[in-house]
Image 1 (tube, helix red, strand yellow):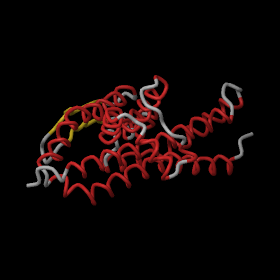
Image 2 (cartoon, helix red, strand yellow):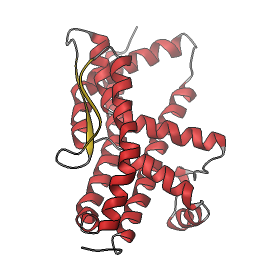
Image 3 (cartoon, helix red, strand yellow):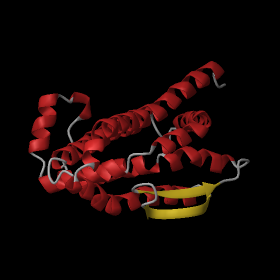
Length: 239
């Protein structure tokens, strides 16, 4: 028999675990934008770098949304890989059947799809030996410094750009709230079933959770490096 109070408690914990990493990434990113973006956009060089790499990586952000829309059966009503209307960006507009539980379940994952793409690419890069990621459970300023100076410049540029442009927008973050409690409940019940069926173990669940949390931390670290690059280059060719 399922413990209802336990399900409610686990659902709330799961909702927090789903939202916290996204909130952390979005808040840090937008704080840096508030501090640095004005200066970056006043330099022809750093502004050009921002736009040049954005044209390359923003399509990956939008394609992540689009792929997730198709995966969860949402109808794409508008799509631009790159848009310069009101600044550099892009968009994927979509609609869904609110009566469909599957499509409603997908709302959260469509919203955070770019972040999941960045985390996946970091994991692939680590497994292929393209990038060596530090242990996020034992991070220190000294450790981050030595990791950074021992990472090739082109590797840093590639992965920092990838993470920077795959961070969910504020609107994506707001959209993720639309189904977070529903998703958390479904995931908790699914985990219960899988564990009781011995298809997965508690260790598997913890490993997935740790991977998402550590991946989010690495996305923030790489995006901070990109902000630092933009800030440093903003001293070149100032308007």
